[in-house]
Each structure stands twice: as C-alpha cells, then as structure tokens.
Length: 511
RNA sequence: CGGGGCGUAGCUUAGCUUGGUAGAGCGCCUGGUUUGGGACCAGGAGGUCGGAGGUUCAAAUCCUCUCGCCCCGACCA
Image (cartoon, rainbow, N blue to C red):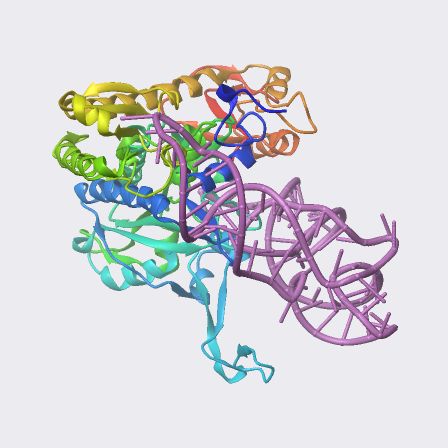
C-alpha cells in the first residue's frame, strides 16, 4: 500500500517502529560512518568526522583555558603495567587486544603467520585507557611538590574488545580525549574532578544542546581503580540513559601502582593524588539519538560541520553561471557573519544531481539551514530559506540582505530551540517514584515481545546497598545512572527495602 | 563463551526442499526527455553464488570441515 506523500519519512523504520534500527539508518543516511571489514571498527566519514573535529576544537579550547596542555603517550602498554592496579586489571583484562609478535613470515601456502622466532619477551596490550602508561611517565617527572600539579590531556584512540559493538556507541576502537592529572593534595584533585565535570556539563548543554544530570556513580558503576567517578548522563529519545562523559578521582591508587611520589613541603615522601577524565566519539551517537528525527539527523548549529548549505538551482544552462556566481557571493557574505562567537560555516553544493535528491540528502545530514538560490531569486534579490527544525517542505522567501543579517540569529535560535526541546522531553520523562509497584510498572513494557519505548528516568530513594542495585538490575535491567550532585536532601524510604534514605538517585535503563 | 540465524553484483535480496551451470529492485555509467525538485524512457557495466574438500556426467542447490557476520544473554566510554 502506498503511503500519502505527507506521511513519508526519509528514514524507515521510524523511531517509534524500531528505535535501534532507526539509529543505524540515520547513521547511514547522514553519511556519518560505516562498518569496516574489521569487526567492531567503524570508518568515520567526513561528515561524521567533521562533527568530531568541532567537538575536539571546542573542548580543547576549554581544557587549555583551564590550564591543561596536550601531550601524547604510546599506543602500546607493557602487559605488566596493567597488572599494577588490582581493580584496574579486573576491569580491563577481559577486553584487551594483545600484541605478541613483531614480524610475519610466509606460512608456505601463500599466506602469512607471526614468525615463531619473533615473539615479544613481554606482550604489549593496545591501550584500553592510559592511566598506567602515563603514570609511568609521571613517576619520572615528579620529584617534588614543586613539580605538581601535572595537567595533561591527550587526544587518542583506544581499543576495548567489547562483546557487542554498535556504531559510535560502543566500537572496538574509538576516539576520545583522556585527561590525566596529578596533584599534591586530595582536595586539589577533587577540585580538578569537579572542574572537568563542569566543563563536560557546559559543553553538553551549550554545544550539543543536551541537558544532562551530573553526579556521582554508585560503587558498582565506578571506573575500575577509581575512588570516585563523576559523570554526565543524558536521556535520548527512547528514554534510555547514556553516559556521555566521566571524570574520576583516583585517590592515590594509581600513584601507588605507578610510583608517583614526591617530597612534600614538610619534607615527607608522599604519593600524588591523580584524576582521569574523558569523552569519546560516543558523543556523536548520543547527539544522533537525542536530536535526530524520522527524516534523519538534526544537528545543533554550534557543532554542525557546515551550518548553512547553499543549493544553487540551475534549471537552464544560460542562467547557470549567474546563479553560481550569486551563490559564491552569498557564501562570502554569510561567512563574514558571526554566530556563537565564530564565523558562520557555509558550503555550496554544486554537484550535478537532481535538486530534490540534493535537498533530501542535506535534510538527512541534518544541516541546520538550507538556502536555495535560483534564477527567479536572482531577479527578485531573494533566497529561499529552509530550517532543519521545521518541516521539509517549509521554506521562506526572504530578501537576500535580510537573510544575511538574520542568519546568525536564526542559528542561535535553532540551537536554543533544540536545547529547550530536549530539556522538555527529559523533564517530561523524569518522574519521582515512591513505591516498588510503581517503579516496576514504570520500567516494564506493555509489549514484552517487542518492547515499545517506555520508562525514562526515575528519581527514587535507595538504601545505598549494592544488593538492592543488583536485584533491580537483574529484575529490570535498570541501574543507578548517578547520585545527582544537585539534589536536595530529603527523607524517604528505599524503593525496595523501605529502609530510610536521605536522597533520591537517578535510575534508568542505559546504553 | 552459551542459544538462534545468515553469508548470491556497491546495497537489499530471489533461486536451494525436488542438482542441469544466475534473476530482480535500488544504486552506478551513457544517451535522451524533464527540471524550484527525492522525475521518466532507452541502452549498458558489474557476480569464480564466503572459503576448502567431497558426492555427481553436472553443485548456489546435497555432504563434511572451515572462516566471517547478525540477533538474544553476561561486559562496557
């Protein structure tokens, strides 16, 4: 049966029909990334990588502004380093790629095999995270309290051999930044952990248009080896939670493991207090699931690789050159405008393909503003402006100069609109729950065979025990996403045991 | 690693039960007609049917082994 035109969506299935499949289709339709021949490893295509570059640039600026510097440490970590921190080994040993040889030889059948004579005396692991190898350097660098703090970040790739990969959300190799700092006192290190969490929260809100809960992880969700893990948690459109960034206070655990010692102001030998923190290409997956719709990606203007695309309409060869020249001129004028404190980014799509196809490609890629410019517009001195936060057919004909003058304001309005929409959605699906029955009902789908979108964030009391968490996880696959830092103290009863509790925590199903 | 499923053109796949040597749609290329719009018509390129072995006059199809991928669980930025 053919669908009426207005019901047709660019992405099938829709979010409501099959959210995970919709996600995959958006990644493909927006030309962000594709699976490679290597299991769990993706190829990030230019449009996807452009988003990552913008994320890098913005975050990097904020790290630098708070005194951090970039450096780079090895991809390979000696196996023995990982073993230095007990919790850390337990957390990562199961998912490590291991390098055992340094040479290949012919296997006599036209193929290659690792040369038996070229076995490494100590295997190397491909970093799943760099605490241990960076710690080894810090141990050499730090002698005195005067050498502290060390505030370093690195942009790198890491490998975690996960069981079930999913593009951007959980890939075997992923790109991230990992900050590693060492401090003289616990208090200073805790301050660093908070500072970074604040940067992550600000970045999520102001750049990604994502409202997030900030808070601390419960013991069972903590980073392996950390004393305290802070996080930002976002809600996406299937109402699940996604951990979008973490900032860990590592106490002296890794300093002991790596031997980061210094002589204090009092002349005593002490271990440094360290932190580590990171966000990854998972943020791109988060962005997609939070903002995209049934016509494809919707990009917050502040993070879009191109904020405006100009689509020249060239129906007749005789007007083609004039239209292209006008498009170039419009691009120059727009690029002179400033939005969010930076030059507006503009792209002209001159490809020789059908106009409709071209328009839909840009809708699916989520470019914030599409501008059509054709011969009739030239005569009238106007352009046709379409916004990604409005319907695909909706366009406004505005005088050229007016559009140039208003472009920045439109982009900023769209950015604010996306945040408002995401916040309203998050708030509408965040509920206080006080009884076990309500809690279980909230997280149980009506249709168990093919669960519909359900649940959300539940703010509920908890007795603080690991047993309750595990019970709820086993029953419902629901976990504590964070113990929110902003939540006021409030007397209540644990959702499961009825024991007294001082504070509500955030529960949700998660990615 | 347990339990299911699947590997046929760039993508989605038909054919396999009942062996006779490969078909479609989309995409791609060329030409034409269109053109404020995901258009239409015509022609064309592209496949050692995941790999190896076996049965047979003959294998995408039957048998054995092997590799890879997807889904469901435990784990995770």
